[in-house]
Length: 367
Image (cartoon, rainbow, N blue to C red; front, top):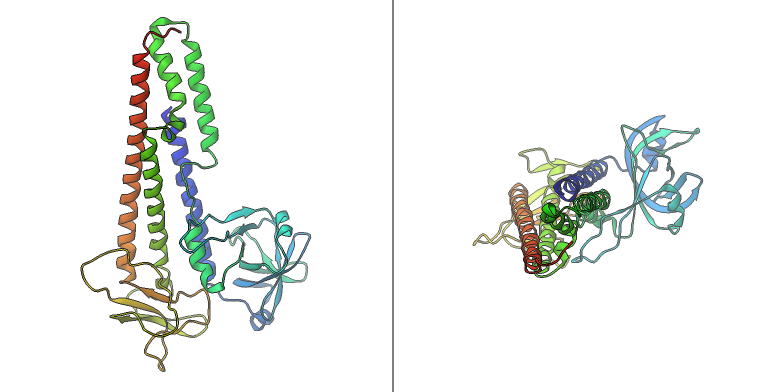
């Protein structure tokens, strides 16, 4: 029972978490690659390198997607390419993970939808286009949000809501339940193994125990805590995004566009009319006034950083040093996850005790 109800689903959950982490890392790598435009496209050779490109769907022919940008229309080969659709969600709502779709379903997406493409530029059929390779798998993401919000949206959403319930969980639970039913049937006519039969039949319903009272209240609390832990893991990733543009120990660096990127420390939030995004909420109370870290393009003509030309570069304010925040978010998320699992196991144990108590009171039942 422990193998099919616990070990295999949990192992599948860890694999699911690893898969989404690899997805986020791949996107993070591609968003830092050069942004393809017409001038760069004219200078490309047969092996053009790794680029990113954003635009709108112009047309789809066979296995080729045509994407129209500001000054360039480029083809994207959908062969062996994983395509994703980023769901729309409210700012404070629960983000659903991106939906992976096959290339033949791309035709169902309406013309004019926004597309992010990242990967290798190669010469194929006497034409330079994006192609997926083993070393550089192509990433195609369809989205419906401003380009400046795409990075945060993907980092927040690229996690599953319930890691225990993954692709292998239903199969594993069915196999485990059938094995327990077989054990119960094998000893059904042996009075000496009556307890074994009762235990096997009771164990069949272990996966649904969390949704029955009185343990259901703890399951509800478990889901709430795991959601909070998921948000903290997302914040953990978000506060580290600005550091990707800086060398360790330095306060500034140079972007691909040639702009000087960095941060300034301020004691209070700017009172300017422009709305400046908060990259992560102030969730920790230190008993002191926070020192804000303002990330953006450093300009001699302004005391405050400005928004970068590249929409994928982090621009906004953090309530403390990013490294410190990342450390705090990581510790708190791990502690919440451990506490949530303790609560869930406690609820299942309470329900099992409740069931065995009922079976004990009905001890006169015969098999």
